[in-house]
Length: 245
Ligand code: GLP
Image (cartoon, rainbow, N blue to C red):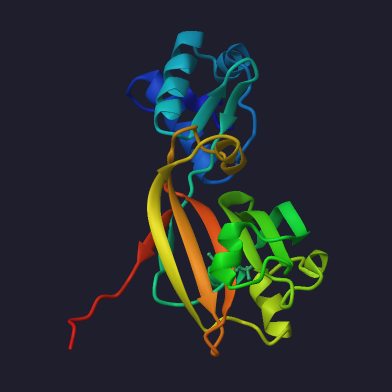
């Protein structure tokens, strides 16, 4: 970090200069998301400033969300997320949406297997009680940033071997000739509770968007019933509106 020059370079309060150097290091990626900031004393020695100056600079960055203090373990770098703009009128998959933005996706699996459907799932998917459904629950991550928790449910006919779904659900459905062609999506506001908040890396009570998608085959049959929780600090859903004919 170029902190040695703080004393010499230009006018203005030291803590502001320190703040600026740290901010530049975070935004340029010299400090990575999740990196621990050196201890206050070490930082003060290194930059040749007082601990009070360090504390003021760090306080500022915590307030602006570029650093986070974790009780008992230290202060950590937060890479600010750029918001994701998502069209509300196109039926695309998460993997495709992220690929279009040049982001790599991965998932942490929360649930993946065949189950007897819940009454909700039975009704929505139009299945008899003795049918089986594949449940795919994932924390969805783009370029190391957790964005959403998605729990998809599809009839076992379309996904007979859930463990074979390693990345995209829609590409698995495509292979079974069951990629949906139409969907109805419902979005509502919520506050993110634990354990979801921890998984998504947001504060308990942070704003979230809860999204339900029911998607259909051309025949009119329901193929997917997915309940998702998206981070409210990251997503903009955008729809184009036209005047009714
Ligand atoms: C979006 C939708 C989900 C859908 C998923 C498929 O995230 N909200 O309803 O299941 O895309 O994505 P993928 O094919 O990457 O698994």
